Image 1 (cartoon, rainbow, N blue to C red):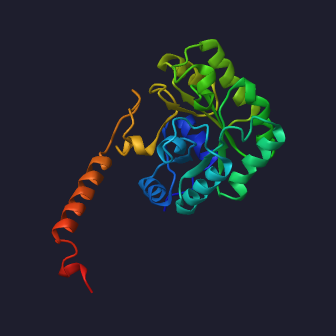
Image 2 (image 1 turned 60 degrees about the vertical axis):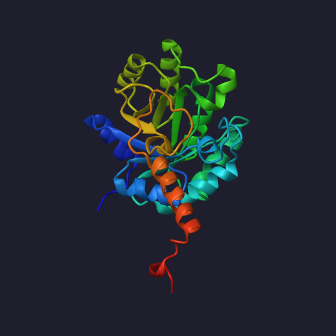
Length: 262
């Protein structure tokens, strides 16, 4: 029987040089499949705004929506660590809001940790949430909630700022940090300088782990895929073929046949 992934598990994996595999999931069926496949971490990302809701950015996603999806995922998972992604304005307004909303992920949704975006600027929030016994994963580099401030989804190349952000979030108590949209050489330097695991997305092969959006990996998205995405299946194409076949058989009277009748 597989053991439950904990913070201790992740620290040991970094020490041993064992890579950490992370996927997003937003519902019960896919969370079940990911967990049974042996994934280490399932991130219920606010990327559900793009993937599930059809939004252009993650900004419209609400706390209640995140709690709803995280609760469904947690119900399915027996092995992986479940991390709930804190949506825009759930933590930026005040420390009190940040602690309360982070706590909701554990209390109401069954998550084991939360993730929030930002580096040095949110280190005080990370410390406060961590001090409330809520594990926090940080997220630096290309941070989608800051898309308007960044002027779009751009690779982040300021090595000094990125290193400072990484060190600050570690000092604040983050148990891990996502590195997004960062050149591989910079990500390697950050990973080598931190005691906590780094999880890369568009950040090269030298991070302690990698994360991808499940729907991108499985070929379920119709949107343009970023350069860093590798597609491992073509479920979208298979699904469309199945639907067309169903329509054809209904219209021709082939389905339902005697085999499908009582």
